[in-house]
Length: 103
Image 1 (tube, rainbow, N blue to C red):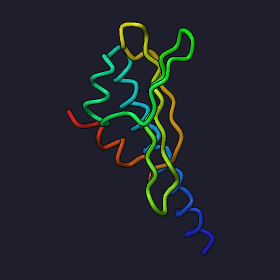
Image 2 (image 1 turned 90 degrees about the vertical axis):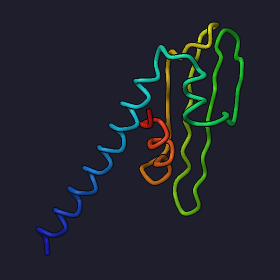
Image 3 (image 1 turned 135 degrees about the vertical axis):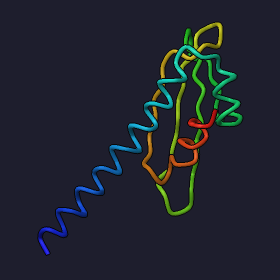
């Protein structure tokens, strides 16, 4: 029974690492791309704010029964993506991961 618990825990940790890695890789590929590329993949953003010298664009996704997912992109004055951040988990961010991985 103890071995089974360890195996289940290891699988859960691997899945978490994999989804996070997938999302990081997909968002890394967005850096230095025009904002229009992200919009083409993710759809229209939920929020679009100019905060002083920063332009921040955010997508929020709420899936019933899953943790919400949000992706935030910071773009420069030419609408080129410079930084990103995200919050969520595999279930909440699955749709965004799939959308970003599409070519």
